[in-house]
Length: 234
Image (cartoon, rainbow, N blue to C red; front, side):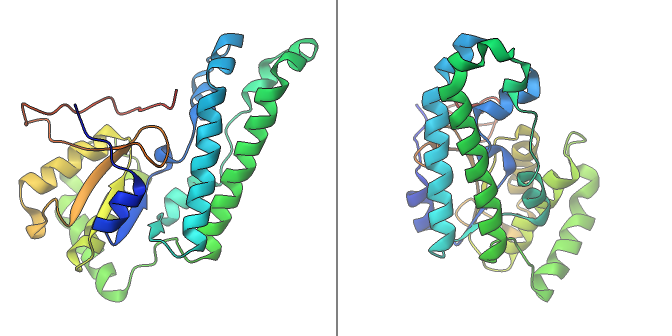
């Protein structure tokens, strides 16, 4: 069985925790994205939604307290976007029965907006130094062509930023549920790019809030398993 890591534990081992959008978004974003909706799905996800609200507030507090929670500028831009409200699909005559979920959905959206503002206001949107920027450019030039074609520009920037920080004597934890990013990360570590090792540059997948992260193990290790790219809170 894979061992869970809480964010408090990861904080002890790494100087920078770099968050991808998909480890901050909650289950209602998945419903919104894929159009899945029924009464049972909403009711079953209330506990998960409440957990996600608590997790978002934990991140807010950590940012305020100066903990090294960071996002890239492109990830920050994604956090400021809103998906379609799944409740818009419900007839007005039936909305009353979903009012608890609707209220929680609105709360979660507000907390996410507040977190995005905190990342900006507390200078937790990564701004590379001149040396780190040069490292970023070199990394991009070296690795761009070999990356998975499924990686978006935000994904690539997330990965390259993490590498640039790690190459400049920072211990960096990438937090993401994106398998193409994990595949690219594995290739970088396996080829010993820049001398990077897991103890200074590691990948974690988020599962259910601040106390549920799993290390992204290599596919080549027979005793470990890499799970689905979408670890949905449920």
